[in-house]
Image 1 (cartoon, one colour):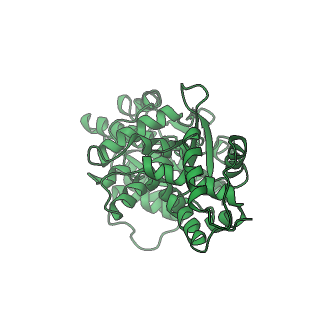
Image 2 (cartoon, rainbow, N blue to C red):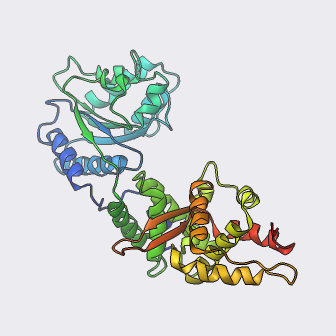
Length: 392
């Protein structure tokens, strides 16, 4: 199933970053002077955008490029990327920064001033070194008031204020540019780069590209990608979409399935959802005919292995199911098209287990997509049907 699972992990930075060429070019342009004229000026950039918009990947890619270019020009420059959710105190951040230059650090107990002095004088100045530092998820820190004076950013930006050589440049990654404790701490000449969320077609390109790197050929169905997009396209979160793909692959692996199916994605979504839909509550609240319509949808999805079922494909199996569960004492008469459509809308509006969409490029054609794993709903329906559905 997997060719290389690491290609779907959050820390992996691919060589190509689809739909982020402009951001890479602009960030590179902002920092190329660190190599062309080292020490002449300090650069500060704020990168903002929603989660999963490619901010971290783009920054890591450009940082690595700048460091490589510096090495080619015999300039001692290090790109250092620190996630402030993981390193959440000034001491932890400074220790981590120094370890990029001195792996055996720390050397005993030092206060914040001592750490700043070592970084500024014993490393950067003494070794004629430069640093491009990225502080990621700064919103996490600002919520704890760790970006205000006289803490981390204040100390870092003040290290070389009076020095003829500017050895530190900074990148801040934040979800929002409205955070005053970030902007107010920086030099007034900072630059801003705003990332928009990915569109559905852009997410499809990213998923297809990464699926080709991570999985064996032919294991990821087009319908599987469609289901992932149904869950992730509204937020435009590539990180979430890729995690759904990874977990769907694990699900298929565990089931020894030759392919990653839409059902694998639905199960992956359920495992990530902090408040998953309880199928027992849904089934308990449904009347007889909505249950039978839902069972018809499930059977059709299992039969076709597609991401969706057409509205017109539901009524025939629904009528068969009515006949299947009829008894000598009580015949279940199928309801008409209007009632079936009302039941389907209730499954969407009241229970949030279906989505209803117009089929792209097809007039008067409606797709129904299930938002929860088939097996969850099917199990509850089967358990109830063993004793016979309540017929009233």
